Image (tube, rainbow, N blue to C red; front, top):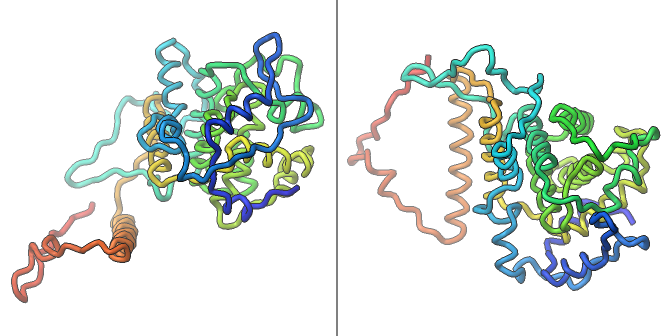
Length: 352
């Protein structure tokens, strides 16, 4: 069966705790404490509830749904710092701050802004930050539980397979970034898709009781990118397109990876805007705490006009939505500087 974006979008439902426990019972643990799926394969999860019927305590503990619940990657990055685990510095810095300890600050005459906003993130910087988040998720994992469909030994991405010690060495930030960058550049995906990928990845870790580790990180990331590109991008990438990027993987394997990933997410592909914003700002916080900085450029007149136009469009859209829902528009603020027929006062901003 081939899963399509249209089918996925129509299933905004989510399983209850009982369904999740039923899924976990279909997996057994070997002598080493590693969770494996039954040889017969996972069964489809039944008894799906509508998302509105989901238990409140589940929602409160899920960082991929609750805007006030801390993201997993930020918590694990702090854990790594407390235990003295530091990543290897490489050329993957967005901006290398070792050359000079100076930081550009805005003044009355000059304003420094980077070219990344929550609505239009910078692609290259966002992919690097998402790669760093995945690095810490792997580095500070709390268990060794995995599922066969993500095991690169059982489902290799290349004909050469993987070395015998493939599951013993944590990947470096640069290696993760190179893998994700290749997929995003080849499939022409957007920066927003990278953030949604991270949301789906953490949702998988929360729902499926599985962890990301050296043996499965590539296939977990691939499954999250595959789903995010279909849900988020206007021009969805087909599974066969990924097979042209990863030459040795089959369409059947991609279909099965997508199917099981959706089941483990319990068909909940909804990402609230507040959650998306939380992940964006947490990624920026992660970048700052790891000596990564988004390069700032002096605000030009052209860019200021562009930002003003974007803000005005957003404001008009929010106001139209409020009026549509029956909310009253208060006019006191609009008329605070207007007296009779006198035009409102305007302050002039001088841009250098």
